[in-house]
Image 1: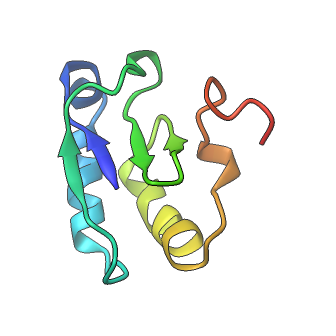
Image 2: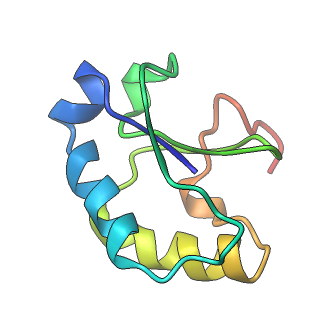
Length: 90
């Protein structure tokens, strides 16, 4: 899980998003990382899940528990937070 910490994302609250992920109980195979710019500044804060390349946009701390439970634990994307520029037909 890569959480952008570059300028636009930081201004939009990505540090608090990262902190919210740190407070969650993540599956053992999940690695949480701060990233540099991911090129999606207009839809920040950005959370990118690899290797499947799921991009979430405008993520706020109160979205994190849902992303962890539904996506990281249950394997279902949180459609309401998908970046529409990347996931056109989701």
